[in-house]
Every structure is written in C-alpha cells, then in structure tokens.
Image (cartoon, rainbow, N blue to C red; front, side, top):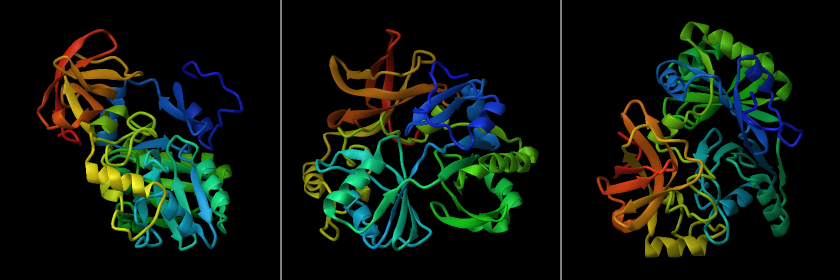
Length: 370
C-alpha cells in the first residue's frame, strides 16, 4: 500500500488519509511533507478515461495554505510575486509565480484573496511558508504568516458541478472559473473554488477544520453515487496533455517565469515592486533562451520518467523531458520539456532518448496538446 514509503510522523497524514485507505489506496507520494494518494490499484489509463467522463474525489490536502494576514499582508504578497495583485478582489483566485532575488521560481501557488488584509497561498511542493516568514521578519512587516487547519479536497471531472449542486445548492453553478464562494457544511462555513489540477473541470473545497475530513469525504461520495464517483488523484496523462506544470519537475529555482510560460504574469512597467524585478526585467529584454514545450514521440508506451531524458536534434541536445507518459487518446507518448529557442517551433523533429535505452522519433508540440 505504501509503495515503498516508510511511514513516520515526518510524513503527515491528512484529514482524508483514513478515508483514502478505506477506499483502497495502493500508493502515495509526498508533497509539502504530507501524504498524497497516487494509486488506487487501477491502471492510470483507466483513471484517465474515468476522469474525462465522470467525477472523482481527490485528497489534495498536501496543497498547504500559507496564510498571510495583517496590515501589511498585501504588501508582503506583492513583494513575493511579480504578478500585479492590486486589482484582485475578494473571491478571486490568481495563479502567481513566486520568485527570488534572481528571478528564479520559488513556487507557483494559487493565491486566494479572502479580504484586503488576508490571503492564502495554496502551495506547490516547496517550503513556501518558511520563505514567507523570512521575508516578513526581514522586512519588519506587520503580518502573521502561518499554516491554518485548511485541507483542500478536489472534486474533478465533467459531473463535478452537478454533484456539488446536489450537495451544497444550485449557487455553486454561479461560481466563476478561478473564483470562490462559501457553502454550508454541517453548520460550518466552507470555501469552495472552481479550480483544480486537471483540465476536466471541477472544484476544490478548502475544508477549514480537519476534524470534518471523514464527514466531508463521505458526503461527497454519497452525493456522487448517481454520477459514478471514484477515488482518484492528479492524473499524469491529463496533466501532461493539458500542459499543467509541476513544481520540482518542470520548474525549480533554476527556471524563471518567462521560460515556463508565466511571463504574462510579470509586471514590468514599474507599477509594482517585487523581489527579483531587476532580474526579470533583464530576462524580458534579452528574451528567453528556452521555453516549455510539449514533445510528441513514438516507440510504444514509454517507461516512467523519474530522471530527465535528453531531447536531441541531430547530435545536439536541445532539451530534456521532465514528465512523460503514453497518451491513449493520442496514441503516442507525450512529454514536457524546456526547449532551446532555435528549436522550439511546433513541428520541429527531435529524438527522445528514454531511460530504457530506446531512441524515439518525435516532434515539438504547442501546449496544451491538441
């Protein structure tokens, strides 16, 4: 069941872990020092088709919230991100790059504005809490930075909206994309956002109060019975096909927002100040030397991409695959790679050298894959 993980208190369980175990989870990964279910004993392709056609419940409590609250909350958030947040309204969710002084990516969270003086950063897998605390203390800001008892539960797939309207009421249908509102659950006020780590549509319930985890899981599953609900997890096929990036795979501190398609979120007109602004200004002026692209390639279903695979044009390495899998819909392998500028145009022929020793013919693709 643990997929080789040796459990200890260092690997934190979530409010939904026991429910996932009861549902037959067979493997975990670790994100933000917390367990993330990664298998339920079914082939990834079966889960992929189910996600595209029905609805799934995902334990994504590992998306920890970094709460920034207080008089200087907006000031600290703006210092952390090159995206201008001045026009954000309460109820907005914003995808934001978090950069260091060199312009390198620290994280790519979803920012939720709860009030003018209170924000959540729904973090990917890096110690964003400590980064925010360090900046707050170093800058002498009047803020509190902590991790509240908030644990997202994702409901993803084309039937997610109908399910959640049945459970919480028809106003769920009025929540816009990357917006949030509030619902009542057993007498408690809970945040629900139209968002999620898939391209199939859905919502995330930011459960406030871990003691309610099992009850929320059961309520969603019961409401989902008419819609063929199943336990699931962020699906690798869906993620890659949709061009959804993963911090630690497609980006680290070695990459800047312009390389990973987040340049559009970087304010460079001087309207706002933030950490790494001068570095990002130079990146913008010089142009990116490489950018994230899709790679379609042949050779039958590829092995697991646990280490980067070279992408070549002739004898020259022009990139490296950081995530890859067989797409049953496209009947080819799909991968993500930073590609050198001279070779990143869609249709450019390449070869992929996968871990199994095979040399596979392919070509560059725009994202998301068609």
